[in-house]
Image 1 (cartoon, rainbow, N blue to C red):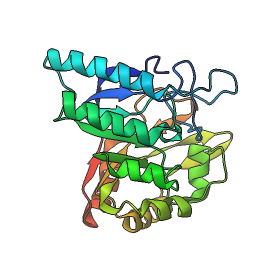
Image 2: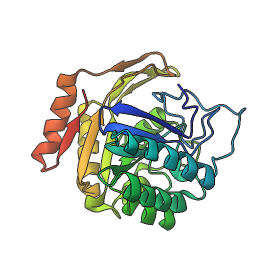
Image 3: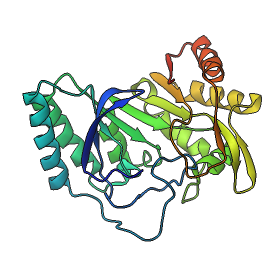
Length: 254
C-alpha cells in the first residue's frame, strides 16, 4: 500500500488519533534504507522514481490542507511524517520540519507533530536537532539483538543495534520508542522477537535508551512476507507490563 499523495488523510491512527500524514518520499514508489518484512508499503524495488518531494511542494500541500481542515473545524490530533519510506533520509528534513512547525502553529496549534522513523539517520546531528524540536520523535527498535533486527528490518547498509541504541541515548526522555512484535518465517529463517532471550535484550535496550514513552504493536495489515503472524493482545500486554514494572509508560496498540 503506497501513499500516492504528498499530504494524505487524515486517518485514524492506533497510536496518534486523527493523524494527517506527510510523505516526503516518492508518491509512486517506496524509498527506504530498511526493507522491513512487515512494511505496509511492500518490498523495496530497484525501479521507480527515487526523487524526494521538494520542500516547496510539501509546504504548499500542507498549508492548503491545514487551511481546509481549520475552516471545517476538523483540525488533526497529529501532523505525522510517515509515507513511503524513511522521512529523515530527505536532504532537507530539518528545514521541512521547521516549515511544519510554523504551519502547525498558525493553522492547528493544538496538534502534535510526530515523526515515524527507523532511527538510522540520528547519527546526523542536524537530523537529531530537528527531531528534538518535534513533539513526538517516534523511533523504531524492533529487537535488542542485531541478528534479529537484521532479519526483521533488512537494512540496506552495515547495521548495528548497539550503534542505534547509543545514538538514541542522545534523546533520553525526548523520544518515544516503537517496537513491532511478531513471529514467522522469512527466507527460510524462523523469526520471533517475543522469546525470553529477545524480551530480556529488548528490556536492557529500553533501560539504556530511557525513552519518554514506549509504543508496542503487532501486525495489523497485509505484509510483504506472507508467513508472518501477529501476536495476541495478551502477549503484547504481558510485554508491556514488564516495561511498566521498570517505570516506563507503555502503550500496547490493539
